[in-house]
Length: 305
Ligand SMILES: NC(=O)c1ccc[n+]([C@@H]2O[C@H](COP(=O)([O-])OP(=O)(O)OC[C@H]3O[C@@H](n4cnc5c(N)ncnc54)[C@H](OP(=O)(O)O)[C@@H]3O)[C@@H](O)[C@H]2O)c1
Image 1 (cartoon, rainbow, N blue to C red):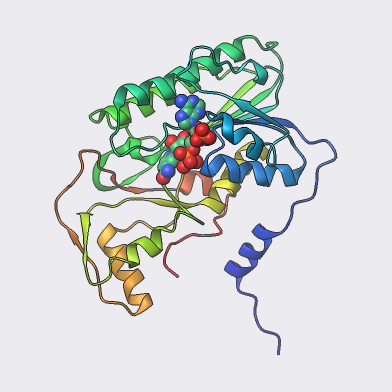
Image 2 (cartoon, rainbow, N blue to C red):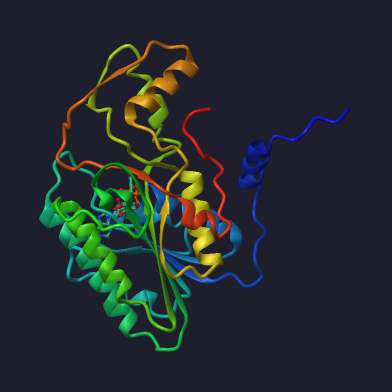
């Protein structure tokens, strides 16, 4: 008797397979080769594309040269920086974000996102008008704010209360304004990112038997790094020109998620708080149906099991 194949493991295996090198790879740039940008660069290199990748740090250029053909210094807060190197490219992934600090400086956020997108707009203006370009911009489901756990698709009004969400929404508007007959603009709103080196399940499990200092009644959303890489590639392959949530299937509260993780690991439950400890709250059951309707599949649909 033959054993029936487990589809989830088959998908995982296929996702790990090396992709064939394309005889005619495209010319693409990754603006911000951080956690996600680096991983996309590795995947795209395997697919045979010619790559440009940016960092703000001169000392990272040599390391970046291992990942991309042309490493570039780019800092959107530096008026001497320019994205003119993108003028003749086929595709651009916008994946820069302010470097993480414990304190969020809203002016720095504004300068980083909006300043950088203005530089991109200036570069795109210099392109021959009819040259096709695919843009993919990584935004965040944080823009939905506190929807009290309501089912949330891409059409709902964005949160206008928190200033960070205001900046992210403005960034989305700016990138959308670059859309034209020859320029496709795809916005992917990501859930909280986890994956190698950002092991959120392990972090949650480490609270077993203790207290998580966050409101466990809110519904966050998540996406694994592998599925971001697949989502970005999907957007390029299908010339997407719209806004999509890129989140996994888990639509439960923080408390429910930790309960399931702890139960599965045979550990005592962790208790979350029941009040907000931050003024920027995401509490929404974010739907990924729009992207799935196009045929997109997840390799990591849940953080649990
Ligand atoms: N982290 C999450 O859970 C999450 C959730 C939703 C959406 N997102 C979005 O997903 C994207 C990728 O996130 P990530 O986790 O890969 O970010 P990351 O690891 O922090 O990387 C950010 C990249 O942006 C670059 N950068 C920082 N300041 C810059 C500036 N002023 N000008 C130009 N580049 C600058 C960094 O340069 P260096 O190489 O010099 O460090 C780095 O390459 C971001 O757009 C982020 O907003 C993230």
